[in-house]
Image (cartoon, rainbow, N blue to C red):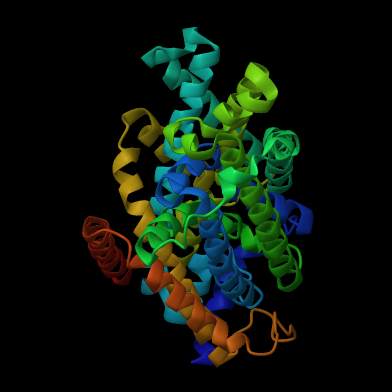
Length: 444
């Protein structure tokens, strides 16, 4: 069995070696932070406060603990499988191409629906500033320009794409840091006092809502075939990004709740902007609205850097025609995959069908995490490594982590709806039929 995995890795690396390993710790950390901190944090504090009240920060702590388990599994797997595809590649090496394909479908649905939705939010924000761009035709033009610019940047190479992500990450964090730095002095203590410990159901409901403010590392790890020294870079970047994200999130919730108190839940559309009025006036509100726009653009920037590599990986491994694994002769970037992904996202953005895909995101992301954590355990058991000379990411008791992560995922999934499971199941069945047809045609 170990020989099979090694041969599979070597086959994939024959294509991956054409790519440039140009992503180091700063760029990968910025990519993870940019993929994680999106436009959602500008509105989600109100939703969490509605369910938990002053105890809302507890949900952030629970999510952070769960993410530590998930990130550890990703770091263990990523240090042993350094192929383009990220979580998809980890699952494929552990369980074979079919299960890996399903993991890729789960990721692809989540990413495509999310980026289409965020681009719509971005277009709405632009229309608020420039009303002329709010007409249906001009909205399409704005979306086309956003995708077109980012496609051009990323086709020119992973260094250019990663550099754009780093710049945008800094730009979108500044309004949030201003919100925290100024608002922390206006927190009213009684607004944060608990009336009692929250029950399991409201806490679980808040966690399943909030967990997706923390996800994003799966996007940033897709270009693993272009990461310098993955065994060292992936774990350090993942943990560093998680620490930065958790601290920022908790401080944002404390400032928003500490300044607005019980009124926080009454501003579902722009809670941070409303809180900023308390200590920065209307200027602060404008800055936060602009920050939400920049954050949305930052998410799209990061997604266009990472998600197209999933199509590249599908083409590389035969799940899609090899045409999709094409590498640009000059820039050595997966150009066809980038153009294909951006085209699909653009069509979803202008059609509005991204709302249907958004229903799948909750269960899809967690099921993908479940497969990855299980694959981590398998990779450890079989001692699979891309580089036999590398030691991988090791620490005492690490074999227990995948089991704990799986338990955490099952607890969170217990708060999902039957409809979400049903829709996700239907999509996986359809994808499986497509996969079997593809395999049959390849054999012929």
